[in-house]
Length: 154
Image (tube, rainbow, N blue to C red; front, side, top):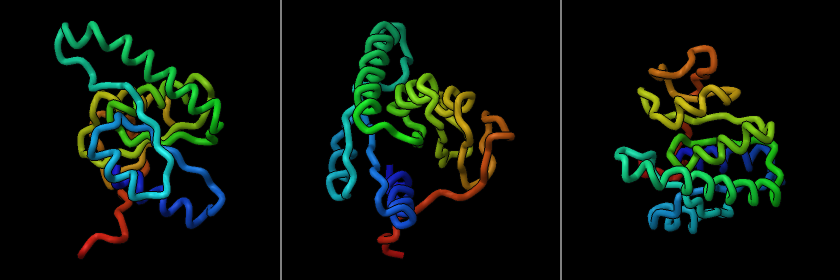
């Protein structure tokens, strides 16, 4: 989430009139961090991808709920672009962006792409990273670095 906030801060400097929203799973840490920023955030009911049969039984309903929240948010704010930060909460936002024809990009900070990034890679315009990322199409990989907060103490 912190790279996403840093990216949002940079985008706001370049485009001061832009409106940035975050769609997050709503963990207490997400809420605590975002409450210190100027950004609007929305809770997404998506949960982690299933690792067991029991979790798998609940996943379709959670995914549909996540898509419904995302669609309401997109209807209200009419995004010109969706930037996914790669966590499981990004899956519904990426899917809805794809099916609504909204350009999608992914920010991947890891050296090995997780499941959500691999799934979103096929729909994305680009995958931004700080270097090589295994398990994503090299043709979409853009090595631009990962944004950092300016207020880090070093």
